[in-house]
Structures are given as structure tokens and as C-alpha cells.
Length: 177
Image 1 (cartoon, rainbow, N blue to C red):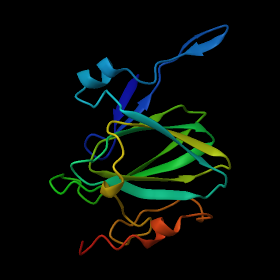
Image 2 (cartoon, one colour):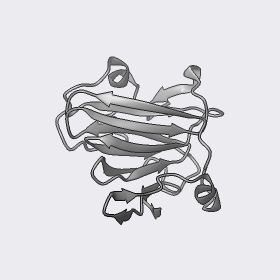
Image 3 (cartoon, rainbow, N blue to C red):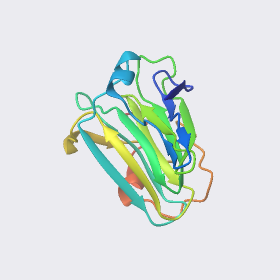
Image 4 (cartoon, rainbow, N blue to C red):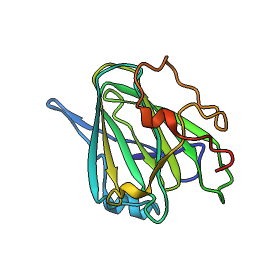
């Protein structure tokens, strides 16, 4: 696996290193030993999938409050997405900064998202499916979010928003929280 640290500390794009032959290829997409040797969370307690019918769908920006803050490994298994994160760690040198990457079934990349970052995505294709590996069991009472268009972060989305949940639209402005 190839690890590329992105603009926020601890945020990594993880690309497989395929071993190809006449049948196709084989590649590791996760290895607990490799992740932990890099100082990353390597063990994940649950996996979840998000399926989205329509191109332009936005989900996010979601996070869980401490002590239930989650580390995630996110991969697009069908279609393509614009995956975005916001650094919400008050002690981080990149507090309130954002980063985004394109994840797709074609590029097979994953995004390693450490605890303390809000996460969301916009689908760039119909029928996009996203696989999440999450280090902690979900605790509903700790779930929170940042509005997808909060001016405090100036996130840009590549397409017009076609679908978004009422919950995601209703998160309050970050400033003053």
C-alpha cells in the first residue's frame, strides 16, 4: 500500500499496490500491522456501506464527539465521489482547514480519516457506493455535524447539490458553538 499524507495532519490517501498477472490483479487494501507500524489506527470495530442513487447527493459533514470520536477508512466501491474533510481538532495547526480527494471504484484509493475531522462527500455518479471501516462502535448520542455549506469552512462542491437530508441542512453555524 502507498500512503500519501495530505494537507491535514494524519489524513492519508491510501492506494493499493496491485500485483498483476494474466488473471487480473490482487492488492491489499488494509493491513492492521502496516497501519499500526505507521502510528495509525489499524483495527476497525465495524464496517458500514452508504449507497446513493443520484449524482450530486451530499452526505455530511459528520463527526462524533469525544470520547466516541471515530477514525475511518473510506473507500468508494462503485461510482465516484468528491470526499471532503474539515479539521475540527482545536489543538491542530490546521484547525478549521479543509481537504478533499476524489475516490472512485476506478482509482481504488481510500481515505484514512483520523478522529477529530468532520467527513462528508458528494457523489459524482449515480449509484455510488461507499465502504466505511470505523474503529469504534457507533454511539448515536455522540453523533454531530457541520453544515455542508457553513461559511466558516468555505467548502466547495464540484456539482450542484441534488439530494441532501434535512438533518444535514439543519446543522448550526460552527462559529459560536
